[in-house]
Length: 230
Image 1: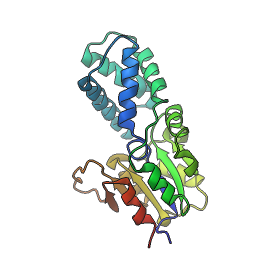
Image 2: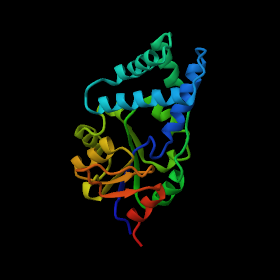
Image 3: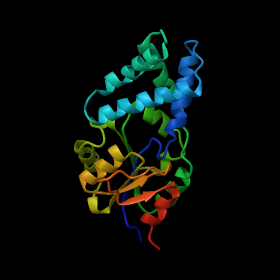
């Protein structure tokens, strides 16, 4: 017996280890222009990138602008003189080849797949996300992957969830759960759309006031007993 017939999984830092992918792709791209980054430089880029994606979620920038603006700001902060657009292209190309799984992702999805329909719902660039997800052992376990660039809207916008729901056969919000690490996109978006939510809080962050996910787990495998009933 299952509590949810449809499970929507976020990709980055829920199923796929984006932090590791970002680190590897950035180092490759910078080394290609003769810059040898240290951990502090990588952390600086990550902070800038995270802030840019938050702006995109709030509708304050576009995905096309984000691709280069994050590197323009990063190069300004680090004092790197280079062709920013070329660096941005190099980074995304490298990123599309970096596919690493979050601990427990494959085991969790293998347990769930025989009993419920699994879908990926992710913000991101289409060829990058598919380049990382499609070669992974997770891909055969999922019915489909909905990527914001292809859908036309970003989580947490209601339009993104509506577009995804329209493409899932027999979609029933009462029997649907979204699992993700982002409170601002996965959890806030799921709550606004009227589906149950599971916050994957691997780092044990405090829950902000006013945010109430249906469930919180610190390990991905803890999702299984929420869905598969004894």
